[in-house]
Image 1 (tube, rainbow, N blue to C red):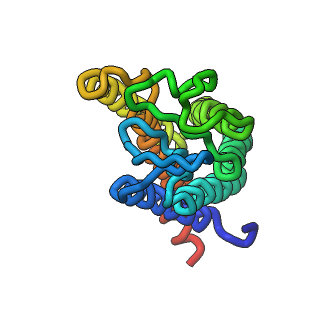
Image 2 (cartoon, helix red, strand yellow):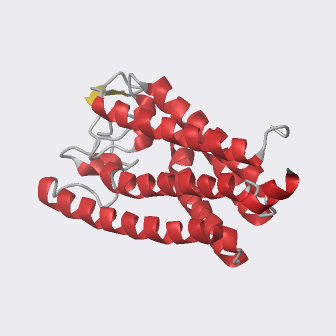
Length: 237
């Protein structure tokens, strides 16, 4: 990895993010079936079920590979950021990389959001499968991941470096888009599925999609910042 240029690291990270996004869209178009540890099966509903629950379907290996691809993408971005002397932001992104790997290694527990909403809690005996310590650990990881994404944006903003201004501004725009999508998702759920909890698959994806777009744009900034200016190229001739 140390022999690769900063631009190559950033472009490779971008490609992995795009591949992950396309894979997730394809999995939502597929007729996925959730498979519980009890042997029970349930159709995956993209409106209710979370992204990580795709790893518990008959397409599980594909979703696990998405987590690993995103982990590798963030590791490459962290390395590229470190080279541009954004050490604090690089550490935050490295932490995100580790969390994606943990999401792949620690699968979530399944729950049934249809009708009997109480069955989504660990105390309810009518759950599709019992809670496990692995599943509980998994459910904590996304909260830490989102916190590190926010910390990454804050560290880039705090640097006030002109070359990072586009990424900081893109973060504001993506955050605003996430808020609009989150509100739209919640309004839709109140109308279509009034019994649904406040935080389900659709609301999660309303936040995840802009976050992935922002990381792709961060890598675009990394790639462009690492390119020599026209004046520098002219002097090198």
